[in-house]
Image (cartoon, rainbow, N blue to C red; front, side, top):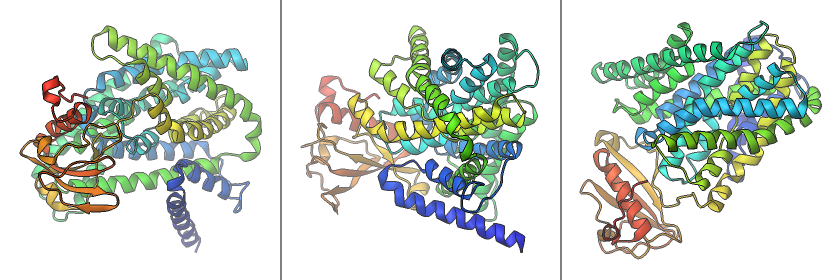
Amino acid sequence: MELDIWLLLGAGVVIAAIVAVRIVHRSGLPSLLIFLGLGLLLGESGVLGIPFENAELAQQVGLSALALILAEGGLTTSWSHVRRAVPLAAVLATVGVTVSIVVLALAIRGALDTDWRTALLLGAILASTDAAAVFSVLRRLPLPPRLAGILEAESGFNDAPCVIAVALLSVAKVPTPGLWEFIGEATYELGVGVAVGLLVGPVGSYALRRIALPASGLYPIAVLALALVAYSGAAIQHGSGFLAVYLAALILGNTRLPHRSATRGFAEGAAWLAQIGLFVMLGLLASPTEMPSAIVPGLVAGVALLLVARPASVVVSAALVRLAGIDRLSWREQVFLSWAGLRGAVPIVLATIPWAAAVTEAEAVFNEVFIIVIVLTLVQGPTLPLVARLLKVSAPAEALDLEVEAAPLEELNADLLQIKVPPTSLLQGVEIFELRLPSGAAVTLIVREGRSFVPSATTRIRQDDQLLVVTTAACRDAVERRLRAVNRRGKLAGWFGESGAS
């Protein structure tokens, strides 16, 4: 009977979370706040008064849920979009994380007069951007491929260094680990994570393409299991499981596996379930009666993170890649990257590590991180589209992936793209045949003023039209470059030397 009651309660919470997300979706309110609110409502100070104070269990469940979320992120990330962004994302996830930790620790130490361990812990916990938040927000926001790729790859990479830093700072010994000890441990753990991810991904991909499973539903399970093999395999070797799972999933997700669309759908569902369970659990763990004392320190640390530490990490990382001749970011792009460092479940989960290790002031750190995440989520997430427009880094005419259930596209090795024509686009007035798309692509449908129709070769594109383009995977990059070139310089883009490079 007790098991039945808990199953009923769990199913009810999931259904309530889904309904709540559907209701607030159009308002732009981030879903994590809904899930945290459900947890607080069910907790010791809420309606049901469920007691939950086991920080160690919360840590283990939280890390497992984050592994699932990172696996989904890797499976649904397009390598063609993040390839150019990987060098800068890697610098942001290593040098940038280090700069953020040091700058934020100095600010917290000076403003709140805390000890060095607490200041460094807060810096390490808050240095990581949240993969789930970044993936959910940015994939609905039209950005240039390179800029979106930087944020996606960074959020997938930077969890690992932050987990290592928090774990080392939570070790019950005095003094705290020295600089060289931290560098040596971090290098080892990251190296093991990379090695395991690069081993499991290709081997798993090779096996799945050549082993015929008896049921199609087994393929999604196998892919997700392989990603978790990478996570646990690296963790057993005292390496970075987060880095391993993301790399393995990234490789698996960009391989033409059988039933690829079903696999992505299954992974997305598993990630949603992990997010709901994770945020509700963290809401249960939080104690509203202790939050008021954390408001002022949390706001001080949040402001320092948003306006000082994150911008400093972006500026230093951008300067390094510019000096190395790898990439160059404009000041507008650097400002946007600074504002788009979204926080979510990851910092709250990381805050359970020192709490479970009984570090002094760890519970106060958890409360402050909880406040910071809520405030920054309310400030950053809803304002990202406005900030992108003000900085002129948004790209409304960029092609966005559409998830479809149609098996023929998968069998034909084809992709479906959507392009919306903004007011400033030079796509306006161009006839379909003047797009001169490669032979493997075609504009199959136009949605105009709520009405859809199949265009002819002489159909003129108008402002606010939505174009659906079917393209083979082989010529997708060429299609996107051509559409980008016409969007910028019109149908004679080639005469102006416009190649459409992102």
